[in-house]
Amino acid sequence: MTVGRTTDLARTVAFVALVGAACSRPQTLPAEHSRSEAGAAAPVPAGPPMVHATGLILDAQPAAFVVKETAAGFQIEPADARRMRSPWSIQVGLADAEPATSPGEQGKKLCERAARYRVTVDEEAGSGGPLHTLTARLACGDRWIVMTATQQAEPPAKPDWTTAWAIAQASRCALAPRR
Image 1 (spheres, rainbow, N blue to C red):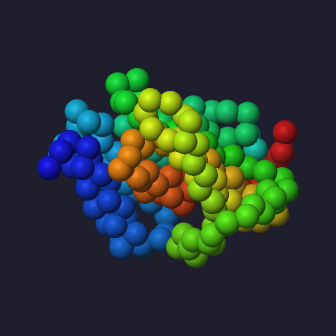
Image 2 (image 1 turned 180 degrees about the vertical axis):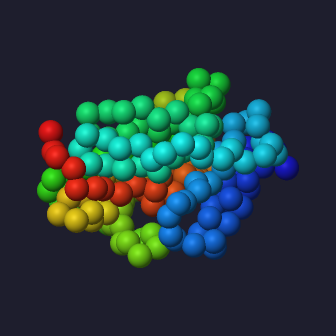
Image 3 (image 1 turned 135 degrees about the vertical axis):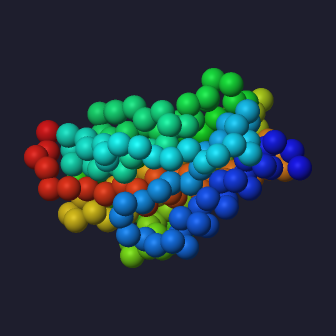
């Protein structure tokens, strides 16, 4: 088995364990291993949830992720993204209005919440293969959590959205003063 497949297997096993355990908080995200960490122990989220000024709350993330605050929310990437040929990136934020519905949208259940999403592919993205973009939205009171995840995948590989869905599930909003 190759290192890439071992990493995918570790992510999938951790995610299945997460979903099988329960959908209640506190919540543990799936293990995200770099190519050099494949087969290592799963990283454990530590610390309190992160709270953005908009009221977006993101549960603690494993040390294998780098979380940066943005104007609308958070950007999450692998800590070793510079060493990866095709790193992924996830942005999550709050919107005051429901994003426009797009053709080809699908639905997905995240525990008790319903998400609407679509996947687009840019075949001309570069040498790392086509760029796949997952855009999802979840109602959060009178606002919307909007997540955008990107991955390049060289054929015949397909993108793995396990981490993106876990981060969407780990996001919620609180009643907080809007900026």
